[in-house]
Image (cartoon, rainbow, N blue to C red; front, side, top):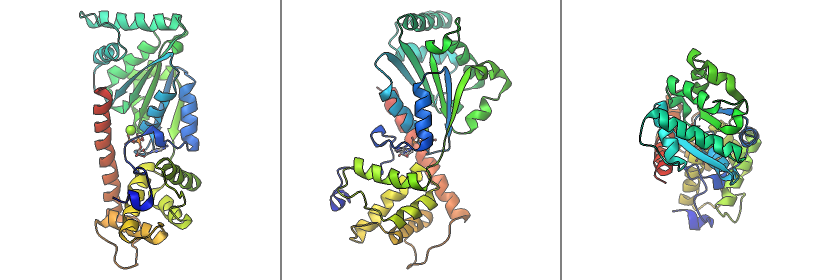
Length: 306
Ligand SMILES: Nc1ncnc2c1ncn2[C@@H]1O[C@H](COP(=O)(O)OP(=O)(O)OP(=O)(O)O)[C@@H](O)[C@H]1O
Ligand SMILES: [Mg+2]
């Protein structure tokens, strides 16, 4: 609706985890570097909406052509089901017989690739959904017979902070011993929020990446706590409000109106702005989580259908 008004080529604050818009905050940069180094099992955690899935999709694009990648999303499959999925996803001929034969086929595949100097990476997004026995056996998959196991299969376990608690379960002790780097994606700091917004505007083709005033960005950083999903929801509403008012620039006043609207589901009463906190903020955060879950399900459908 507001695209032509602002001269934008596309929506800058789209809620899908699109790697074209990737902005690397300090912790995103660190997580990406660790994941590209291929050190056995890597655990990547972060609060909802901090950019884990976006980072994984970008990582997938950056892995070299010699790396076979399988992406498993929010799965509750048992271990045998994961093996079956991997055979299918990695294009390995699937022996019809027993789970043991399928596991053997996967192991042969991994060993052959290792001998040929080729890597294989398994990315498990929303890994907290895996049940404990499946997690425990995943460790064995990465570390089958050889001491160089980490080169055989790199596994990235990605999820919210609760994933760490799951990895503390006594039954996954073996897997835990194989874990190398643990990275925590942090919310963006105030400077990063500034660069994040400008980067999204630039990728969306904005003729002026200063579309949001400095004070507007400060307010967005303060309200969002640096969570990119919240920044996107708020940023999109700011553009809508500015467009409705025929304003070419988003100032702090527009941001406050958008915040009030998101919190109360209505326009803010003339000029005054209620402080953060309380039930309405909790409701808004809940909405942000629900949006995330809905997007995650849609993304899973998209990835699995390819
Ligand atoms: N580093 C980033 N660069 C660009 N966009 C980002 C970044 N981080 C997050 N976003 C945007 O924020 C939104 C949420 O990102 P994403 O889905 O990757 O978060 P998540 O951590 O996987 O969330 P969840 O825990 O709900 O799965 C998306 O719209 C995404 O485009
Ligand atoms: Mg995600």
